[in-house]
Image (cartoon, rainbow, N blue to C red; front, side, top):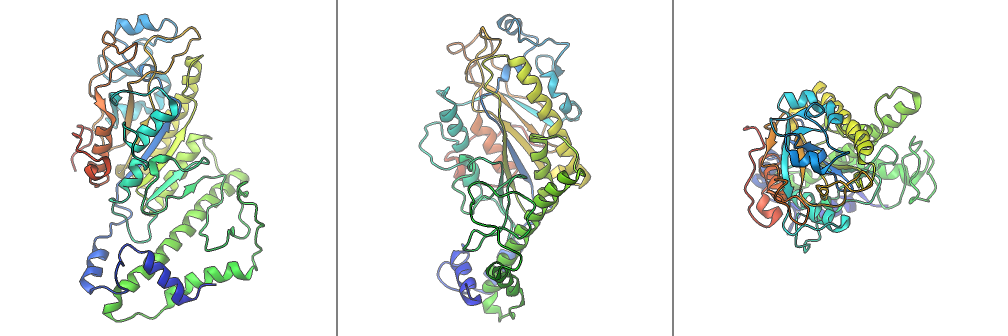
Length: 439
């Protein structure tokens, strides 16, 4: 078991604030404390991956273009069907859940998004989007690198992945661990041994075969007593401020982990008791994100995904179900935030690894293409169409040509929303888009 002295020493050695000594001048500590943002004021970015290669042409529909109507005899959508964005394009009708936010100017539609020399492999293209490196030389994710420059409060959990798969490349490379959470998984602070919290209502993941400890397990109880007792340590002189700062940071981290675990457990209890109502799938995942944001844990970045967009056949039926789910889940998510007065500080951005070809195939679907579209949603955006829609009479081997490098979207969100140096993250300067409201 770790002693108090050993625990603090290990925490100090792991802290980026302590490089050469166990104490620092008081002005350094005061500056660090003053720079801590308040969790209920920080901007938050939620990234939603549409896995499989979403067909941009039937998401943001060029309904006024005769070439679109001719290229898609069974999949085409008419002017009467779409949700009008402007005189040229409209949204798929099953995104009707977003209609009010669209009319209120809270949905930005970024058109013709892509990158040079597009790759039509799911895995390669997804890695390019998640690493923000079309040359495929970078082994870390753009959000992971971004977390190195995003200000978070002491003890905050800077980023979270909501899902059951392995951690996405997008959040890899962070200087701090990005935990994975999901309503089907236990989440808890672990010290040394893979213990789960006693009497947890959540089932054990299959990768954790060790037995559940009882509530009287002495080792389990001792670990928590150790952390909690740190709060009672006497305050030292001013020269020891940095030790107190790190001590407080550890305690706040522990407290936030406990709060996060309770959020997940309460979600499971509510469902099992029948008290929880709402859509499954993406709706539930976004509801969990909303609960964490409203709990003010200081998390600045969330990543989650919804699959099913590899629509080689019967695309119309598949799109209906997926877009119903997305439209309803997103509007309910922002309503959840609005009721807690947190909607103004949250943006949600979608992306997919590539688009689809212009002409539909013989199976009433579409095959792998390149240029596509994405949405940035929230009260902080300038709504409407952003950029040019690709021309359907100027194709690249049957594919749409892109007009907007996706890294411009990333740069805009990093610099303008998260307050992070995009050049340091992306390795170059990219011109921002007129995407965000001033202030």
